[in-house]
Image 1: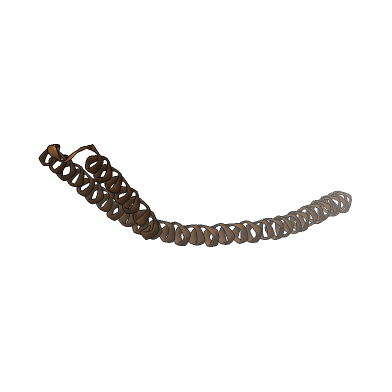
Image 2 (image 1 turned 45 degrees about the vertical axis):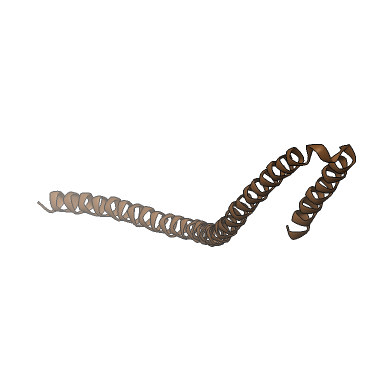
Length: 141
C-alpha cells in the first residue's frame, strides 16, 4: 500500500512538474504575445499618426485649392462681365461705323454733281475719322 502510494506520489510529482513546465511555457508565450501586441500597436499607432498628418496636410491643401478656385471663379466672372461689356461696345461702334458709312454714301450720292475732288476729300476725311475712332477705342481698352 505504501509502495503504491509512493508510486502515485512520484507520478503526481512528475505530472505536477510537467504542468509547471507547461505553465511556464504558456506564461512565456503569453508574455511574448503581449510584447508583440504592444510592439504592433506602437508601430501601427505611429503609422496612423503619420497617415493622419498626411490627411491633415491634404485637407489643408484642398482648402487652399478651394479658396484659390473660388477666387479664380470670381475673377473669371468679373472678366466675363468685362468681355461682355466690351463686346457690346464693339457692336455699338460697328453699328455707328455702319451708319456713318451709310450717311457718307448718301451724302456722296447727293453731291454727285460737286466734282471728284470733294468726294475724294470726304472719303479720306471719313477714313481718318474711322481710324481715329478705332485708335480711340484701343486707348479706352
